[in-house]
Amino acid sequence: MNLSTNKGRVAIEVKTIFELFQRANNYKPNEEEKIAILRNHGYKNPQRIVRVYDQLEERLNHLADSILKESEI
Image (cartoon, rainbow, N blue to C red; front, side):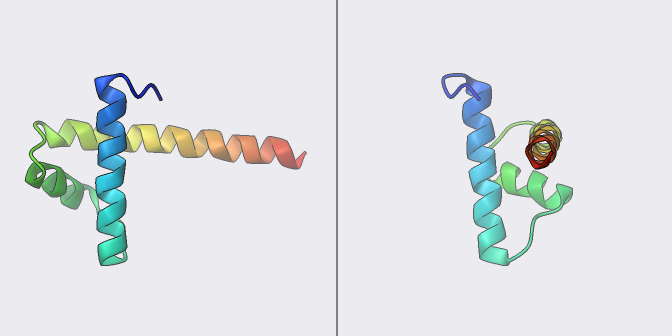
């Protein structure tokens, strides 16, 4: 992820915010909670940010799983 881009910066900030929430509450926030959390942090259009972030997280997890499967072969 390119840290010099605004998208990269936002993705890292959002990931950090959600990780802090998870550590404080001992569970992962659901979609509605994620939207409320970002709205409370002053993000505009938190629905879109959550949707794109979840898609990115899913793609990264899929990629990590495929790398692990290849290394087992």
